[in-house]
Amino acid sequence: MFSVRIQEEPFDAAAEAARLAHGRTDVGGIVTFTGLCRADAGADGTGLAALTLEHYPGMAEEEIERHVAEARARWPLLGAIVVHRHGRLVPGDPIVFVATASAHRAAAFAAAEFLMDWLKTSAPFWKKEERADGADAGGWVEAKASDDAAADRWARD
Image (cartoon, rainbow, N blue to C red; front, side, top):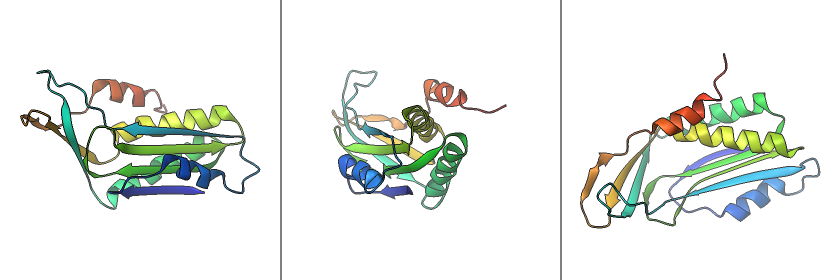
């Protein structure tokens, strides 16, 4: 099973992982990652009240599916699920879920990390912060060099 979904509704990470494992006897390991909205303090010390995620419908799914296909080409995956939310999220809300299944754990771990690194840098999502004190956080969140560096290690020559 390979699945990519972008949705506004919350997801159940345990149910998603169970769906990937259901009825499978060929899977030796499933690696899951759930990303949550943090209440990080801004440069001025104020916390995050909400994060709004926008995406380009159709293009976002296609881009994520392309990366799942790349992961399948690199590792012997038996399944993968990627769920990414959009809309207004508050601290503690789940944002993203990635699960990869393989006969052996190393492939599942590597593929999950690869997918998360690419989701952070290549999937067409835009984030806007809303500060707890009501201040404008300066508009849309800029890409981070650390995320780009993490994704660069997967580049093929």
